[in-house]
Length: 344
Image (cartoon, rainbow, N blue to C red; front, side, top):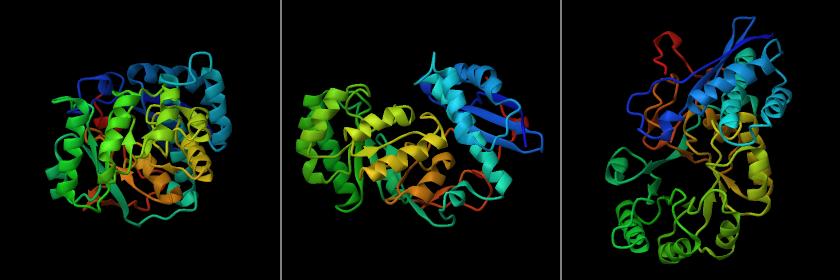
């Protein structure tokens, strides 16, 4: 089997938010072969990511056997190294790597989770990320919840956040998992103040309280915060996560498989973090790309709800009463109707 083409587009998704999540949003990467199989993956970087995939990455992959994915990943990384390492280039590689894994599963006639020694057909617990829609999420059957709180500043950030956490705990009861996400908007002092005051509410974690590159600040939080710190959504590649793990800057790691370098890097991050005794909970882990890793590798499976506007990815398992279940379709099980895609 040989690769005959690498294609990429940025699909238009209705209700996609009017910010970087659209302008630099998700791209579809397709890897075609001479035996009629096409692998699909989703990366990021918008039209800039499309350009990287259709030029540099296509030049690397064209004519190659798609099976030695590790070697091909390294070749893509080495080729983009002068302008890559993080950001758009790695987002583009993520889509290509996922497409190669999809091809591997399709060629074997097996789901990716099963190729890794995991199982399909088992319900996996999920959590939903909300802003102010907690009651609706409870009504939909979810049993674990993450609150976005970076927008709360009325009456002072700390007091507002503590009040929101208290109200949420009252709504969901004492046992169901609860987390908060500050989306890189706080400083060390604010985070420690919040953590101290919400400790009685038994949060699973405070997510990304500081900018992703504030390693010194995260070192302070790792030592002093009474609530575990989570992060990594905006980090790239195993090399980037290695520092977070070795220095134990986060107690929960949250790589996004569509951004961090693809499935190959997600597997490496999982293995290294678990050897260090740290938890991995992929960003948007209920989306089918990360869900196979959760099903196969996770000791404490908990999959985050995905982006509702990504409805052009067919074959996505639904979340029903707070759980999600992988089917037996080969590869990632995705169905892409290319003829129906609207693209930028």
